[in-house]
Image 1 (tube, rainbow, N blue to C red):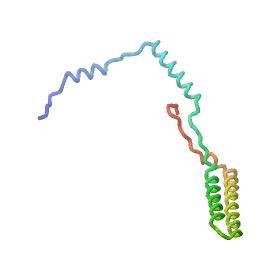
Image 2 (cartoon, rainbow, N blue to C red; image 1 turned 180 degrees about the vertical axis):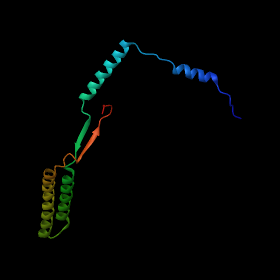
Image 3 (spheres, rainbow, N blue to C red; image 1 turned 30 degrees about the horizontal axis):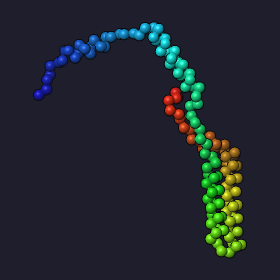
Image 4 (cartoon, one colour; image 1 turned 60 degrees about the vertical axis):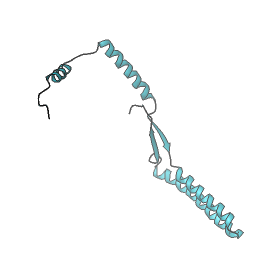
Length: 125
């Protein structure tokens, strides 16, 4: 069964706690504000984000891939001229990938877009 009587003791405690208007001393308030402002100033001097640029990552992956392919061609192809030709093509594609990446980053100005921003902990935003 449910008790439908109002519990007046709890209501009185709640009303009494709502009426409390304790205000801290002005000196304490000033000290706390000064400490807070000092901590904020220290935190604002620290860099908020750490930037990790990744514009070179496609260039490096392309170079590594085609270097491994040229090495594979030199090792696996028995005909010397054909293996050098395949390795040369792989070398050319690797160098072209480097040039295309550098020119693309310069022309499109996408260095900032290909950047990961890592937020540090405990820093005010």
